[in-house]
Amino acid sequence: CRRRSSHPARLAGEDESIQTLRLWGRLHGRQGDYYVAEGVGGGEPHKDDEQNESTIEEEANKYSYWVCSFPGGPWTRLPSVTPAAIVNARQIKRFLTGNLEAQVLGYPEFPGSESHYVRALISLINAECAIAPSGFFTLNEEGTEISEDEEFTFPDTFGDVADASKWQVYGPAFSSLGRIMPTVEEDEEGNEISLP
Image (tube, rainbow, N blue to C red):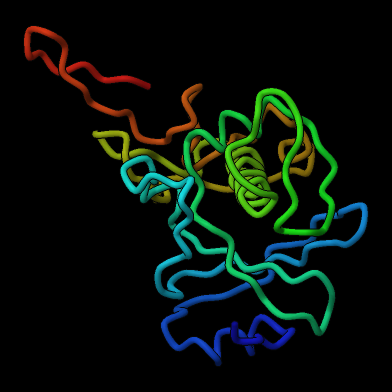
């Protein structure tokens, strides 16, 4: 296992396939914290036996994430997030231990180690915390892409911005099945059914 440097910029220098990289934040754990870096690129994430390639969504894994436990520590890339991890992470409340290999105890049983749980938490936080003034973004006709509304004008007064009803969550949201994009299946008669 190759050691990585402690600074996200050095991480990008070691892996030339990383196109963008930024410090995402810090997650607190009982025995250690996770400093999280978010990037685009970085090659393929490590595949686990628990992860089924067909259940991994490209949109949910648009960004790659690396964590280190302390400044100066080695960076570890987190695995891809799966719908099962999203569904179970919503249902359990656990303190992070600071050990990526730790088992995530609770009910329902979590499908993976703490590294999978951390990745699912990051995805859920991103889905709920990406906000913009109402009307700043618009969806295309298919409802699959977000773009800036060219006719949008920023509010003139602080009161307009301070009102929570003037803001909206934007970006992909996870369905009750832990997916961003609906899955299409066929029924007994061969008709296509779209599941959330």
